[in-house]
Length: 241
Image 1 (cartoon, rainbow, N blue to C red):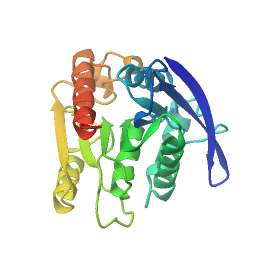
Image 2: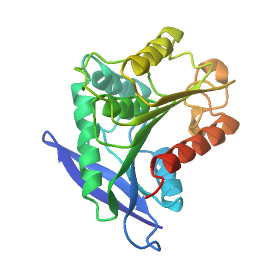
Image 3: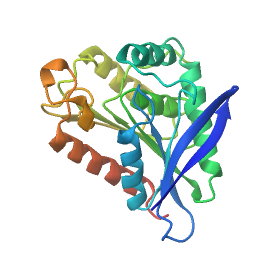
Image 4: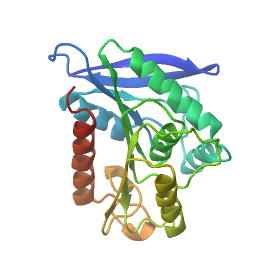
């Protein structure tokens, strides 16, 4: 497996992606963008990229903040993520769209065969990518924020949507979950929403701790099930090439 750093930019901000793919495979392959949690690209996203590479994909872990914007504390991460999620989410959409454009330029990326997945903050980001009308086959949100944004809506959502959600996630209230479902129905999206019993926020991240009473905790059984669901989703989306 080969990994590399790709430098690119958006609105004057320098960005740096982590890219992984199996160099033993010949030719191009479907490409999947990975959007990070609110601390930026970490071991969690890099491991997801390596797993996707082993499954035959080009994995592109996008940088949504910039090389000079690396939060060091929970307070900094919360403030930065809130800035991106607030209002019409113009910056968030622009940043994740720039990553998709850059990923498509990679020589290993198969034309017309792209997808995206994201964790927590990154889950919100890939949902915004779908809402923007981006030409990508499917997006997967792992324990992401589900609330519809106030951004202008594209006439059509082209991507299929899979939301993998902790049934006991205290940070995504029931009203937000309901609003997400209504939005998907009203926009005639090909969508799925999967709940994992006993799982709270950040259930896929081993560094989230083990105490669900804190609102976020790693739940390995749900994490494994969710990852398999994502792989099956992308296999379906890329069927036939």
